[in-house]
Image (tube, rainbow, N blue to C red; front, side, top):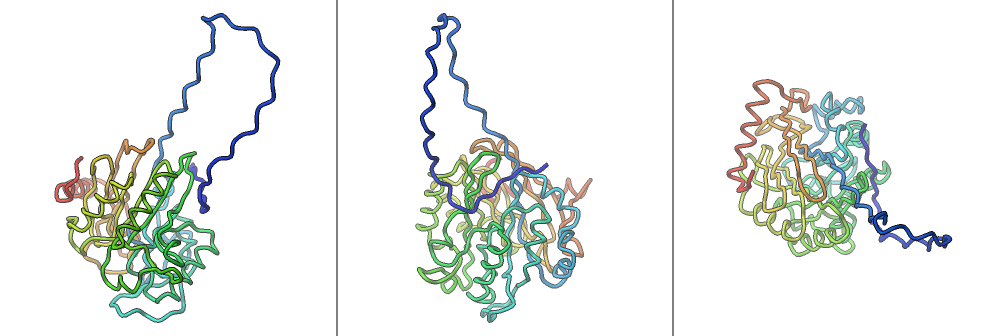
Length: 346
């Protein structure tokens, strides 16, 4: 059964315990029988699951007629982890004015019900669609997520809120989640301000890395989920690689990505595990690629001890469906091969 405990509040330093009551003196034990200090408990193995872009438009909007089944059979795999995170690439609003861009995505609060039903524990909203309907739409989205008590990160009501990590405790392990967008379109107008809602941007590199450094000091495990890369390019570009190196140096243990509408490679960047791109996941229509999957990582302390890619395809309903047999083997081999141009080690 999935075990998780999410906490949206900041992790506070533990209060000191009151002094123990004084016990009567005990007879001294022989030296050979002296008690030895108990060893610290071994850190638990966490099962983490990540997938790419999710939104509810056109064919996937129809799935919200029954939020409990919106993701289809793959939901059981998503739920079979201690922490599951995806990119929610849509505003939750009926208001606002469309921004000057080509594609606009929005949905209603049933989307949150669908995410919960699929076993998805938190979402990044640091992407290039969360302000498709302006700051009014973003504020509506934040209100909807708060009303549902649903964890998110990567955007906020002001600069501090947008760059703030989401802290959660999973099997006693303190986890920090941060999200940044590296998409150039409208980035200058979507940036947050002291009194202005917006998206946490990779372009404010000093602020982004400072947020990671601060999270490193307070959490046992630091995860960053980025929206980046060139559309249809299976190889991470220099901008992604440069930012990933900065995040790793700042203390990120895992760096996950999406946006390119195609898979990008994963592997090691020093001691940091990086998955540059997980592609589309729950997708509204035709795209540059229907290849997708779930990245399942086993983590002990700060180290990934096992990495599994569960290959899938975006079906005609827009739902991701796990592949089996030869098709699964073929996509798994292709995904493993993307590590080379990503510049990551296996």
